[in-house]
Length: 461
Image (spheres, rainbow, N blue to C red):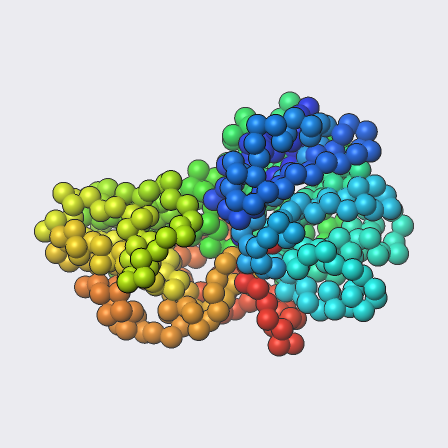
């Protein structure tokens, strides 16, 4: 999973993109980068660094990044691996001017395309699937930039929300299924494009609309032109896991408030998986809204039973005795006065591997919880995601190898309950239909690389 943002037609665009990336930091913490384009579109500058946005840029990095066009990217490294050589935006010299690209999503035919391009003599500088798109554009035999971009994007399968600059022109596009979000806004006569509406809010930009699945826009200054849309190979299928976990609760995706969606999940969960308890607590922060919804529907009071430490980074010191428990203690602290002697309903957004949850339950027991009832505001995750969410292999997914009773015993909880797939989708049916492949196993696109036996990284570039 990654975050992308661009500003066109506003002075000091790079500084505005920098602020947008701050608000998208939850979408990636491995690397950050910005490409700026001067007013004439003659010269592009790039700056990239590893770590958080605040690590990648200091007070002087943006001073030389002049111009009213800029594009930025924050990376969660799964596809292609970590390292600055895989950080985005990519910047290359192209026959029509400097070309930069920022990509959120995963291509499911990247290996197939890459093999063909290498056979034709293409030289790759990174291991990420996004670089395939650059080569397809550069090698297209169509006339003109618009046609070459159309030619390249028409060959892609899988998930891609893209921001490209060619000279002083910005292009924005979503794949025909619309797996990953991309929103459009305006500010001071210019245009802002970003992964989520929270990146518009921080700039004081006005939200216009979502970029539609398959839509391709050309943006020059403040002027927006719709190009030929990409041919759909099925209905739209935005990722429901964005609403379950990934997007920020103050964002609005596909016309749906993320906070309201999660509250709906929690209310439905209370109806489907009730529990007799003294209080409801959340696993902060992504489950806060669902826990409030569960409390509203059940009548069980919501309490702050766990406090999350927001200042925990990566640690290189880990006790050999129980590294997992140490990480849980580093991240979460129980409020003993809330938990001691109480029957507690714990709401989490999802259960993937189950390792953190097991340590968390032990922490609650240690704090004096009399009973622990674990509730998940989504169905069992049994299948990998090939569209840009960091899901492990099927064998690592706890729900793919254990029954609900086995998971309950493994976690050490008194009861365990999941929101049903039907209940989840009905809770947000006005914004659907959705891709729920990680829950259902029904993938809406061909998986060309998987079908050919190639290992496909299950994460975002």
